Image 1 (cartoon, helix red, strand yellow):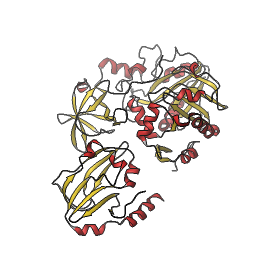
Image 2 (spheres, helix red, strand yellow):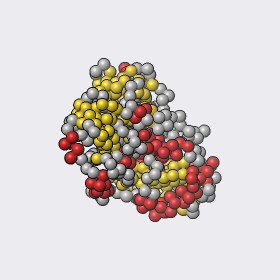
Image 3 (cartoon, chains in turn red, blue):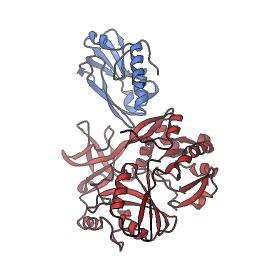
Image 4 (cartoon, one colour):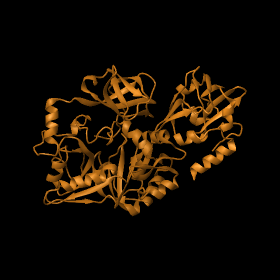
Length: 369
Length: 128
């Protein structure tokens, strides 16, 4: 099967992206002359532009749209204002995670769900399977490109070419009608890096033009950023990745996302009874931060042992470009989850000492207030 | 792509610089470029003996984990411990940043390696 290309494919070639297969999409892992660490630092210190057009977009409309979304997601959307955004997992009846998504509220009869690329088809069929009367779901993923401009200088760059005062778009809010470089866009103050920044949705045909306009507006303050740095940035900010921190056999409670699971909301939602039960019985495993005591780099899915007994696995681990040392996230048995507990990461069949900790990750610079 | 003429090369992108009965080994410019930012090097132990193409160490970049294979058989005489604290030297100067010195077990091994010219042609085929 041939790889799918985003509307920005030609731009990636133009900027010498090193193209890889990312879940069936041909996307740049890094750019020539930069590399993951330089790109990472660029976003932390200045600004970076990402092509995230592979993300899926689904509009939910109809009289019962609010009821439908409320029953689909674990978070509580009833209190959302128009043009506000909410993060939420969606679960299977057994509490395992289908995906995590962003909910953009236009009105109580219209929501935009932004879903993960690798899960887009699965999510859309899940949505259709659970659809109720009076609600329509439309997959508009192919019509939209999505660009993310992230970093402390993102706002000043984007402001140069847009017709709306960006101060008016607060963290986790959006404006559905912003002209950026003259193009009609949806602009939200959201991202996946732990930095302040924006995500810009634009018609696929306008994407390449917009990409160039943003890079030109940013000049030396901005660079194109590949998927490699997207992963290191989201990881340092402890933002979960589907297939690693969350998955069909990991519940949001185990993944430390309990804040986004509103078990006390009046409405029923898919997975509620299983999650309630898990909460009552208590977790048997949970996601923890850890640091290495001996030399070695933890990687996703490496086994973790304590006194020779398997107690869990690494969900994501890597050399952190910001802290210049390896850190990791692990899903481990609850009895070993206390900070300070020493554990062994199995690296190439050898136990390498590590320690469960807290506060090891990047403090988000997003403008939450 | 920098490929010095005085070295011999493997199809796993290692180089060896031969001096009498010993050889200094490292990874090529092509290897470091494709690995990306190198963040960890696991060196062999001095005194350990290996057959040609045995894995003698591990190199990790931000994204990838790869084995280092010795271009020739022999016994490790010396390792470049500087790389443990500064693995990025492999990106910055791949031909100055040798990884280990090996006492050659069988000089015939060298016949099986590529010259700079052959290696350049080999890299070209990978790019096509």
